[in-house]
Length: 444
Ligand SMILES: Cc1ncc(COP(=O)(O)O)c(C=O)c1O
Image (cartoon, rainbow, N blue to C red; front, side, top):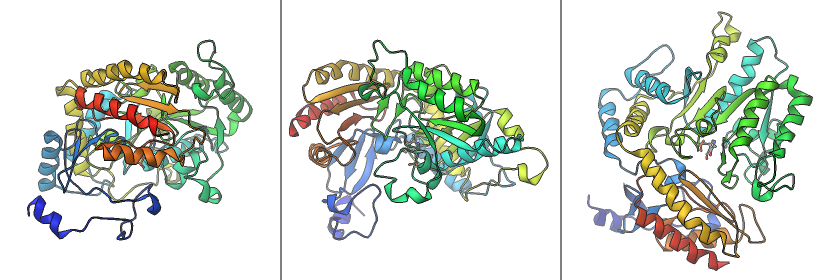
């Protein structure tokens, strides 16, 4: 069926005709929804022939471009051979190859990999493993979690508990487990009122205070390393993450690095923790793991953590799994993704994006409508000064629609406009995004 024929058969989707419940979308905000029929590099192509530039990698998942042939072929081939088999009591070549490929790029101490379905489940697994590790080690009282202000780790119950209080979590207060919360290094809105140029990362003292007082009951600290995404694309100083690592070690708690967003090159190195020169005890991966083709999560842990689960007593085992754990098709996509890192100049592309961010951000920093600009690797963010900050700021839907009318997909987080493109984006297209943002900020 041709694109044109399918267009005539299908009415445009609108809020009124809505049967599909769209994520993070209020029905009242929905106008007509573009119907995407194809993806090509950094572009999304709709059934009426529109070409929309994907400035946020389709919620931060796409790495090398939509429809990258190597991943598409790997998926096709694997589908014909073996679509799925349970991973409990079985193994298969794609999962073994993926384990090998991942072990080449993650820090050596992260020896063991537990596969799950997405970012939220990778976080759930990490939280449960951290708590059970202490139980298995004879310290069951160490079962609390410390997380950061402005953190976001997903929408399932545990991931939502460790995420900061927000509009997203407000309805679920009763079902979130209690978490101790430490300051984030949000330099633009410094939680301790200092200036980055002259501070000594005093914001990390709040974590030290919590660990000093409650370390005996704490299992782990969970952080989004160097870049807090959904909380507003907040970039942390490297020293802050290094200090967190040192504090976790000092007070004998595990460090969980949620690299669901930052993994696979987003911050300019394969992992954000690598950029800071630290190794966490547990690492959560998803989003870019399959290059943005299929949902998959992974939680990596040290040998010490794994070994605590391997004693013969049944209560020591990790009783957790998902139907599609280690799905062979997702594994094949992830293997192809990691091969692309080896065979294409991916880090040169990321460096090119970073250099354009560096070139374009200063002009925004001088704009009186802009409060802060920040960047790390392929991500750049522009925080506007608008009075009603927060996810539901009045400006957000206006900006979103304005960008979409210009055929650019950007989804500001409140008053924070950010760019996080697939690595294959052409320089001229990235400049076009910046030119359009420049126009957009005058909407206020
Ligand atoms: C840092 C981080 N952790 C976890 C998640 C949850 O991932 P998913 O949406 O795949 O469940 C996200 C999603 O944006 C994220 O940014």
